[in-house]
Image (cartoon, rainbow, N blue to C red; front, side, top):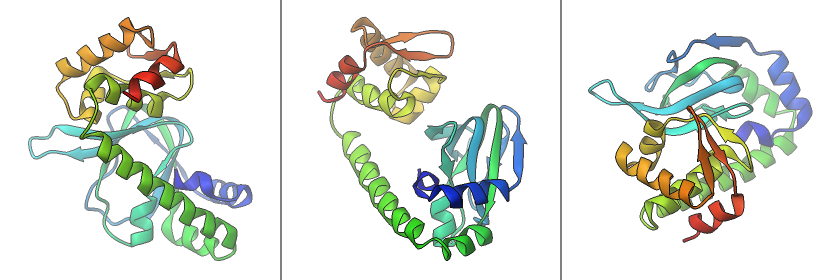
Length: 208
């Protein structure tokens, strides 16, 4: 995430000078089409980022958690937001105002350079993920997604419906892919959680 690329002193200054906002489960954090007057840093809980469809259904494209940030790109571009964001469970997020962020960057040139590098990396990762949607089996794509979401050995609190949305497949298809990963000993399903049991196996499947 872009916020993570900033110098420690700048991050501390922005966090301590920005308001903390609380959201209940399912509450809208930001709405597509609104002006990007700041961005968000998750301090507790998690959030789904995506878009509401015309029929009211929410289609997730990412699930973010502790320490993740979102909304920076619209802040830099000075354009309206292109995604909605919804709280997953109770969540606390720090709102970092656009004017404060851009003004602070002027005093931290090293952070500005680091942001350019982080933007380039994010673009490369996005292009790689888009290319991955066109190749590989559903279990391979799901393995790669879980590695990104959960990290090494961490439990990811995510529903099968969310996994299906992130993969762009039906829930039945996502469940079948998840069952294959579980049978291979790569993951273990719990109530609302997916625990990575063998990262090497998951990596191997993701590379197929």
